[in-house]
Image (tube, rainbow, N blue to C red; front, side, top):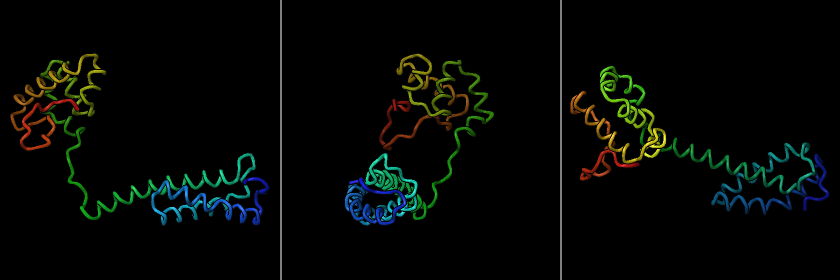
Length: 188
């Protein structure tokens, strides 16, 4: 299969192409799920392999080498397709509305003053949740207490901050459903 190929030989590369193309194409069709995309990637892989043919070393079978190039091309193709799909969504829907960066919100003077009024354990829970984005389990592991304790601390800290900063201020996540009036600091 990979035997008898000489690096840099055009005739040998033509033989490799004839022998390996159908298998490479089928492999890429299975990976990408689209025959047209698989054909594009297979062609790109063989072009790349031909450009590197002089550097190929027969310590690995030539067909395996081409397969490795082809699989890497398919991975890159998928990655680019994901990026293209995000770009398409942005073109159609527009950019999402800007939201307040948690880092900016955390440096508000009124919030900093209110955080200083909290006991350190409550302030730590709030900062780890809303500034760093940790969930209850991660906060519990960081602080060394149970997840229930974290839930209690978050609830107590939120109540105290609401009083300190006036009622409209909210640290809790929005409810998934308008009828959901449950605990605002439920586990993630």
